[in-house]
Length: 518
Ligand SMILES: O=C(O)CCC(=O)c1ccccc1C(=O)O
Image 1 (cartoon, rainbow, N blue to C red):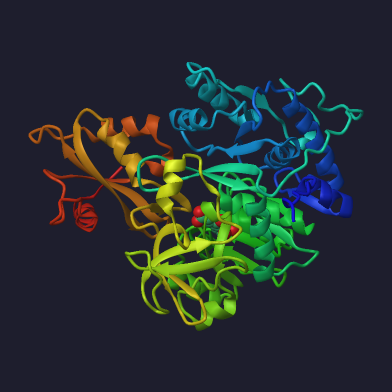
Image 2 (cartoon, helix red, strand yellow; image 1 turned 135 degrees about the vertical axis):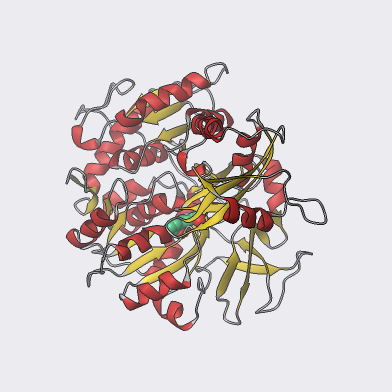
């Protein structure tokens, strides 16, 4: 037999549009506007034209997207897919310096933004202007307004010819998504067409699909938890309702008003909805609860209120869900995140990388079609991949039926309100303050946010008190709001373990005692 043939396929949206052009693809709660798949497809074609006007000097162009959760994000995403570009979603909450570092690492040909993020995009590109790869800023307006500016000459014209469909292959890169680790630099995760389609397919087997499903998307689309529903829903031919940001009362209203059948939430959001007195309608089939561990108290409250909760364990590196528990399992097996999705394998290994028996603790290692082919930087990939797959850094165990329990997630990482914070990144920033000699950055339990960032500071000169106001303003220009320490303590020296590493638990205790909330 000869080499296997890679049969090309068109992009996901054009297939979907061919099948069900008149079904509703998107509803925007903010404006009430709706798009059928045919209308979305047409809009995507216009944006694809605009992307094709960009000057591209190499084969695998990337575009960064600096947009919040909104219909235009969806059009840009599918337009990139249609033109064979890789999308690099950027977090709109980050500062210009944080974003410039990511733009420098990924070298996109353009930063695509909306009106609201245009000035931020210009600031970011100005910050990378010194290099040869300064990207263009491309502003795309909401589809309903049928108007794009700057580099979109063909947009708005009904007669624009269709963009030649780029043939996609399973291994083509589709997204580079940043996720925080614990080592000081955000990780750039490459995800292929195959990864994302495999994830959306496997999700359907766990959550089920009803042709009349409406998925509420209120998580940021620049994170996996917000982007995944867009892909799933397009594959299934169902409807995404976009709510631009979460608000307990507004989200409760949207869930009722649009007869939402499924929603992805982080635990903080679910808690806030319940606090606000929200009760699910009969239409609601599932609440996919992920991004951080759900407390047993929250799950108990869900059960008491008949919330059909599916706790999930996932990561950006696996294009979202690894394992997801059903409501029945959540009730019968306390604390489980369920079995891995179909085609995903999870092996629990010991310190030597050898598989352990059911019930024994170890590191979770994951393999299967949803797993990233690697980080942008190969050295990081080599450090994370072993015989059984990608090492998650999470500790847990499996029962005899393969149900998983995750005890601590990526140990040192802080998860605050669904945003992941790398303590190393915060630490580097704080250490750069002239009055700080050293610091420890840890997560502290927080009733509202799950965790909040805490910092224990050691002054450069122990006779001086650190001016906390100057530390705060130092962080303000360098770190996104959710990464800034909310609790700061001062110590003469950092607590250390016998081996000399910072004793994070002791640092946490110190912060609980001496805390100064900022
Ligand atoms: O933890 C991560 O990095 C991925 C989280 C994620 O994708 C998610 C987060 C919240 C709700 C649903 C999902 C999901 O797996 O789809």
